[in-house]
Figure 1 (tube, rainbow, N blue to C red):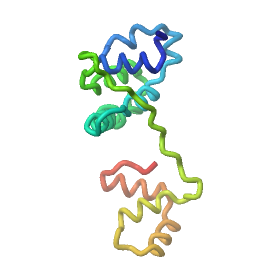
Figure 2: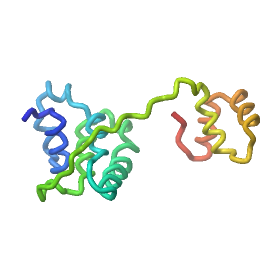
Figure 3: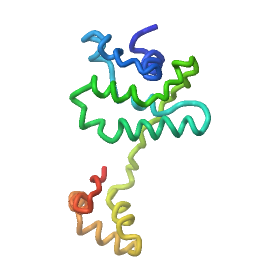
Figure 4: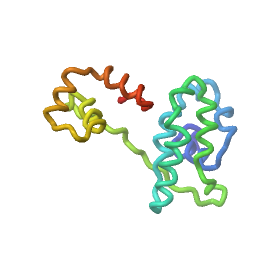
Length: 153
């Protein structure tokens, strides 16, 4: 089995193989993608509880600070090994599946309108439109930071 096949990577992920990243050659490390591993790792086939567990565990343990530790791929891998509940140790690892990233709506030019509507639910649509016209996305992001929230994407 190819070391960098997604099937092998997910097997190592579920086995909690903390030495997997160290076993890769420099050439293999260039081809390896922690981002793809997280996309595959967060989705599994099986019961609803198992699917929810993997998705929530990936979000909590990986997605929140994934780019903060982007210069440390080994650390990203080590964090990823904490996701699996260790089912493969018992020989019953779930089959992982790809979860596509959400595509941006090309018609939605003012994505911060949605954010403004969530921030001010009592405002009417025309008021939200006006706020969106007089405030840039950067303004909305700064406002969110002052509230203690992360910036919009």
